[in-house]
Length: 464
Image 1 (spheres, rainbow, N blue to C red):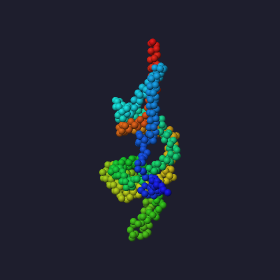
Image 2 (tube, one colour):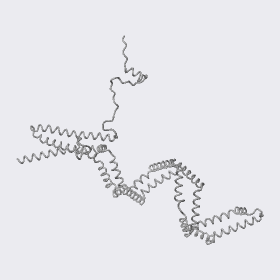
Image 3 (cartoon, one colour):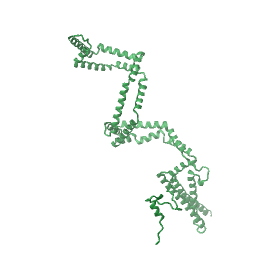
Image 4 (cartoon, helix red, strand yellow):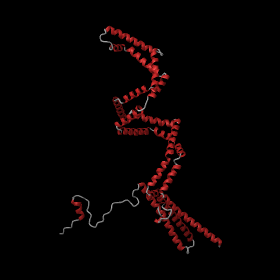
């Protein structure tokens, strides 16, 4: 009984590569062909799925146009060979001959746009790769002159109706909620990324630039002068006097205690009471007199003081220096900085908490504001016209100031493209339609050849 020889493939499946049992991968046998991995078809490397589909359509149309040319050639050869036996084939020959001429001429014209026909460097061929810079500049000028003009922009925005479109979009609660959520997310991200120290530094810089480093005395003096001249400060004086009289009437014991504290300790208690009562009634009487008399000497003295203060703030160097010193001292006070820091941290925490909650009062307020704005844009004709005018003016301003820059971007972008790559991409976009030119040229050439031959034959017949 003979023992069968072991199957190498089976042994490989059992042992596996490297002698590892259980592996199902077979080792390559000597002389066996190793198939390469699937590769990208020629001409499709680096293309998007959409561009690959356009490439297939372009190849299909090229094949149809070339097949039509070949058909014309076959018809021409057959008709030319048999026209002596069958005279009517002369008309077929003429039609096919014209079709070949039209097909070849249009093939040359279409091919010359993108490359040199048959690789021959004929002048004025491969127009796109050799003149792409001029084409880019011309395209930029065309866009600038025909699209980025004030008349075109205003006409387009007027036809669109910016206020109507924006209003209808904002009036939809779903859109308003989405916009609010996006703004809240952006605000949260900004506050998270910003450092508290950076914010404090920016605020301190703004304060020093606009408050500390600026002399406010003339402005304060001018403001005080206008307030005193208009009598607006009388309202504040009346309020202070009324509140003082009210407090004295309701708190006699508290006032008496304040007076008693300032008397010497050796003064008898009955004297304290007499002094307290006397001072209290005199103070109450004085305040009530100021309260009832618009021309009281205290009011007049206050007016005179404010008028003089207004003049000193504007023209007295000593007073202005005092104001600047007091301002600098206040700004540089560490306690004020601490209060400002705590205020910012509290404000930031409150904002982050409100923005993170979809049902917070802040987000609901913003959302309702968007919806209300959208409704008003649709119903308020005056507001809508203002928004449309603002949008048109803003767009025209951008166009007038940056139209040349936009056109330059187009030209510079085309200049950076590789010539062959540019030709290839443009051919993918329009090449399919250009193949119809070849097909139409073949048909038109056939009809033209037939018509010319027919007219010539008719002329010969008439002449004879």
